[in-house]
Amino acid sequence: MNLTAGHDLIPGEKHFRWRAGEITRLEAFTDAVFGFAVTLALDCIKAKESAAAST
Image 1 (tube, helix red, strand yellow):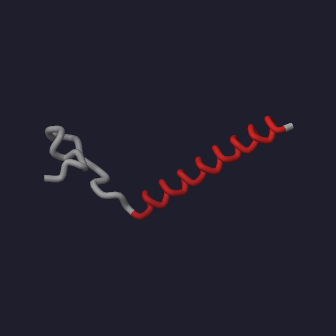
Image 2 (cartoon, rainbow, N blue to C red; image 1 turned 45 degrees about the vertical axis):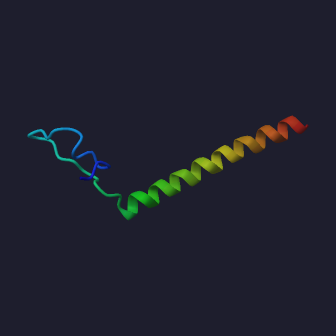
Image 3 (cartoon, rainbow, N blue to C red; image 1 turned 90 degrees about the vertical axis):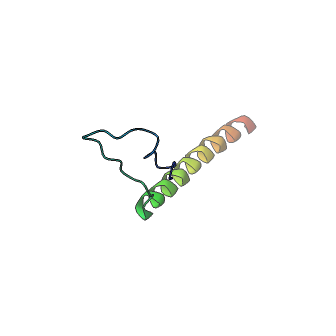
């Protein structure tokens, strides 16, 4: 029984199809790029705040 995909959590409906039972390589790469971009953005904001506080 695979509960991580949600197939067994909600009863099926006639016109509904579960998608993305497994994460593809493209989805994993996109998540990594997004996480890296957010990290860089937050780091840039913290650097600006730190520079403004020291002057």
